[in-house]
Amino acid sequence: MKDTLEDFEKFVIDVIIHNRRGLRASLCRGVFWCLSKVYSRVVESRLYLYRERFIHDHHLGVPVISIGNLTVGGTGKTPVVELFAKALRDRGRRVAVLSRGYKSKRVVRPPWWKRLGKKMGLTTYPSTPPRVVSDGNSPTPLLDSHIAGDEPWMLASNLPGVAVVVDRNRVKAGRFAIKELGADVLLLDDGLQYLKLKHRHDVVLVDRTAPFGTGYLLPRGTLREHPRNLRRASYIFITKSDGESEKLIKRIRKHNKVAEIVECRHRPLHLVDINTKEIIPLSALEGKYVGAISGIAIPESFESGLKKLGAKVEVTARFADHHRFEEAEVRQFVERCVRRDLHYIVTTEKDFVRFPNLPKYDVPICFLRVEIEIIKGREIFDKIMRVMCEPRPVPPGALMHEPLRAV
Image (cartoon, rainbow, N blue to C red; front, side, top):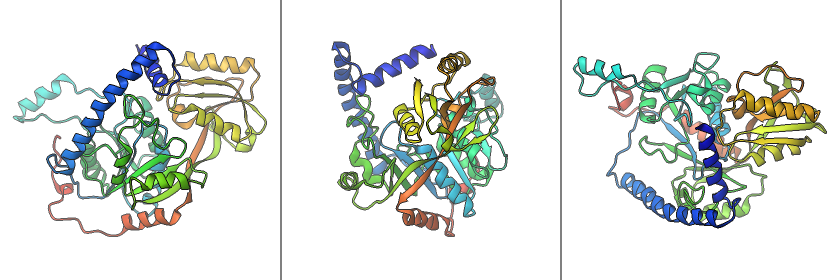
């Protein structure tokens, strides 16, 4: 069943980006184009209802920074969330990251839960509490990556002192983080389209290599919203930048003339051996033959990054985004690499989170640790931090003082 869904997902992606040719692919693109028109109307109607206050958002009484994008996947959002969380934590804030836990295993409410609520005389039975991946005190994640989701688990591993809470209802998760975990600032992961929770700042990421995806909205393309909705951004981070983004900035300014723009890139730090946890310097890749295995939105970016580090990428394996690897799949790939006498097998940190427990093989298996490096606009980022860390009075009757209730 999983393989069938992933094969279908890969087929749809190939159709969207024109990797599939022929009559069937053309017919699919025609159907997707019609559906994208319906999707566009739905998106704009939803935005209108929130903008005109027909639907109200929730203010929880603490600052909320949303970090999101206009496209589906591939902008490098998780390292940017990590950058913000570290900076706020180091300035003394109690930070909680709110994530929906994409493709994580949902915790199903047991049947007796509703019966318990009725016995207690409640008109609405107690809601299932959010999944706490990190409470901000534990040195390691409290849940495994299958339950938490790969990105929340990775954030919890790399962010000691920061709470990470997973729930599709981020209002409920935010209330829980404030009341139970003492959070005084919330980072809304992938939050641009999540309008139920009031954002103090909207940080929107734009990938320099594909700023507006394929130019079409879902399902014909990879855009979640029309580029004109960049006007909602308080700050725009151009990711994967080379520092020469003047043409892209002109395009952005057509949609948002006032948002401050920061340029950043993903900087490789080192390799980590997944068995021994040994840190291996990047120089070890120079001139070495390498196998690359990944399950991310844009595997080409990862593979080209290895080549820029001097590696000779001889064998590759690409899986669907957020693919949960099985031991047989990895073993088969490793055996190919051993037969080719490769020096290293390298994967991404996000993919390593979804790897099964593996025995030690003849060829080292490593993940590439990266972080966000700001190359233009550091003063803008520092200004955001100063604003977020200034003492700010809590408005009377703020919801952070309300009792926790089902949402």
